[in-house]
Image 1: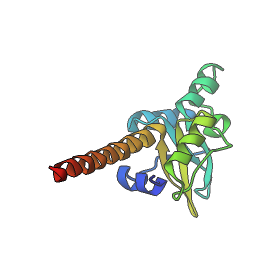
Image 2: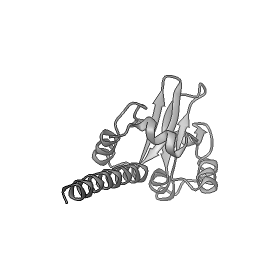
Image 3: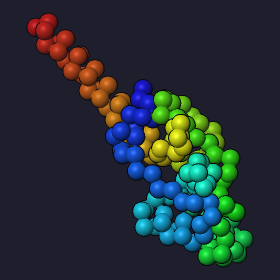
Length: 149
């Protein structure tokens, strides 16, 4: 089973962040421009302060009739962030994300946030690994059959 570091190496380590002091409007604009569903929120020292998702926006701004231009990210972000480290196994991440009902998982290193993975990233990796295992088993089985004749 792969680790988070393997997935980040494959998909890239580009991480989109926003300051907790930024407006929600700027955060939504950035998510739209980058075609992503969540941002890591950082504090003044570039450490993980929270996460802001489209779900946060919909439930805490739209449904509460707040102004996205005057509401700071810190007011609606999820501050108690579920995160993983680069050496975490992907099946552990998937279990964690399923239990917590989240789709985005920030990855944190010693200096702060280093990446973000999604449940889709994990599923794609697991499917690729299973396909390779099936292919290897089929090769082994057919090679064994051919050698007996």
